[in-house]
Amino acid sequence: MSRPPVFPPPPFPPRRPRPFQRTPPAIFSPILGLLGLGLALRRAAEVWGLAPGVGEAVLGAASGLGAFAVAAYAAKVVQRPGVVLEDLRVLPGRAGLAALVLGLLVLAAVLVPYGPGAARAVLVAGLGTQALLAGTVAALLLAGPKEGRVVTPVWHLHFVGFIIGGLTAAPVGWPGLGLGLLILCAVVAAAIWLGSLVQFVRQVPPPPLRPLLAIHLAPLALLGLVAANQGLPTVAAACAAAGAVLLAVLLASARWLLAAGFSPLWGALTFPLAAYTGLVLIVWPQAGAALLVATVLVIPPIAVRILQEWARGSLAARTNAAQA
Image (cartoon, rainbow, N blue to C red):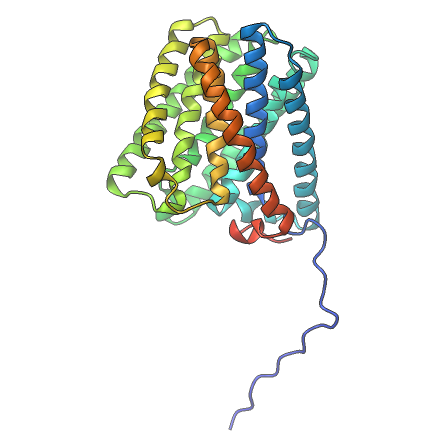
């Protein structure tokens, strides 16, 4: 008769987890939304000739929060560098790390009024990091199983996110870079929109993943903003009109879109809305005022709730974050 297996007794006292051992990448999506809200408020001050204090305060607070989140994630990576690839293998992790890198490109736009030299340096660093992330994600998708290569809205963050650099390129004296990003990212975004449409016809996304569909609005908004920066108002207006149609569809299907209830993936609702608000403020200032009010009412509560889950320790488990 075989002996039963012997298991070691559990440690006593129980081992305490190390600080930031399981920092979830999902924290970066709502922070990106707060940065986008700050840029929209800055844009509103420019359009209406108001004092920029509110927008700059939001940008400062969001930048500080982002710096803390980056430090928390860096502390996790230092403990075990392999967690980065593990986080990239799950959808919430890929979306969160994409938001982290895109936050660097947004920071370049934030810095433009304070120092073009600093903005240029952050822009170059952001584009380089974005290229590294896009290449890594592409390699993981190609090396993984075929079913893992399904086109998702998160692909916009990886492969079209370079367009955010166009918000900084023209203001710091690199209009050629801005135009190149505009053309290249428009082509890539169109391919992802088409692939996503085909995928949607074949298989409707399950309720938990439906909030990610809002990401499709972000490329339209950002392409329009960069076009406005490049002195192409007709292109900006066309992007705003197309975005209005898409936003109307998303609002009309809001009950279906949010059927699974609140989840960390609601962070995907924040930055597209903020970016589109910034575009509407340029093209249709009066409509932009109403949309800005809605943006202020929507983004902070979502961000607060996700960050509260991080503070309570439940966000990592809900998003399957890797542990160092």
